[in-house]
Amino acid sequence: MTAAQPLPATMRAARLTLDESLAAEQPVPARSGTGLEGRGLSYGVADFPVPVPGPGQVLVEMAYASVCGSDVHLALDGFHRPEMLDAPGYPGHEGAGTIVAVGADVHLTGADGETTPGALSPGMRVITVPSGRLGGCFAQYQAIDAGSVIPLREDDVLERALMAQQLGCTIAALAKYWREGTRTAAVLGLGSAGQFFTQLLRARGVEVYASDVDAARIGFGRELGARAVHADELDAVVAGAHPEGVDLVVEAAGLDATRAQAVELARHRGVVGAFGYPETWEGTFPTMAAFRKSVTVEWFSNAQGEPGQWCFHEALEAIRTGAVRVDHMTQVRMGLEDVPRALEATRAHGEGAAKITITIRP
Image 1 (cartoon, helix red, strand yellow):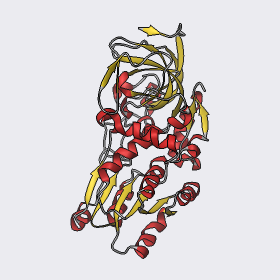
Image 2 (cartoon, rainbow, N blue to C red):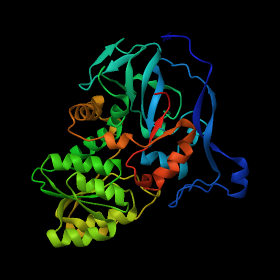
Image 3 (cartoon, helix red, strand yellow):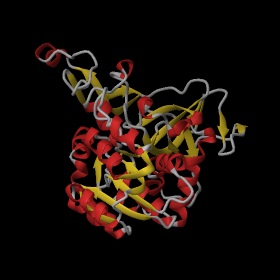
Image 4 (cartoon, one colour):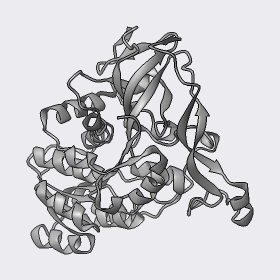
């Protein structure tokens, strides 16, 4: 292992654990259509040994992390990987920081998929983009596969670059949903993903209708150029302008109800882009309605598996050039000790914020 300087022995990190006393009162059921709903699970912050990077890994001293909606499902709703219980920093996967140590056999993979041995070194600032089910950035240090970090430029602002993780996911998803000739779209849910989808679609000249239940998010959707309304009003608004439906509907809320609404809003032979994290293990879907309309339903997950992780490189460039607005997503901040509260706030529609940033070591 190559390290820039001596490292501390311990660190603070968030931890998801099975609380035996809670489990005794509320036994954790088998995975089912209702999920685990957090029964028997406890989420807090504890001390851990600083990890040592193994072969192919780097150790990142985390500066910032941001809370993703999927983190809420993994930490609070029972969608976690059982083997990740008690793992430091889990399930945070949107992080930014500085490499402080490098394990053996480390190489850098570029957007073109080409690898460069020895290109990652201590002192290099990076964003961390592991699969959401394997994250560990709610911690002061994170040992992570070298293929899950993307180096930053000297002029990149860490808090802004952090947003490239979520933005990159939406860029990759839209590449799958997009059809030539798309002129109209609806975006269901105006959290960070929905706001990114709105900006990306507006940049392509698409007429966008959007909805949420939070007034602040609806207001920002309007600032982005969408005709944004309360979720209860969207059906009537779209029907009034486009009785035949819209070309593309992006479902970014992750609810059974919004997936059904997406099918209703899509035109005949239109496209439904399913992006939101499902609310249950076995959800419902309007199969007959989709069949009668002959809609194409495109599901998307695991942007981290895209070849060369091109989407995150593209996201960083969009942030650098100002093509996509992110500054408003960096303004609400909490500390590492507040991660449990940040997860609850994110569940409550961010309490008006599109994103919550965890400040670890600015």
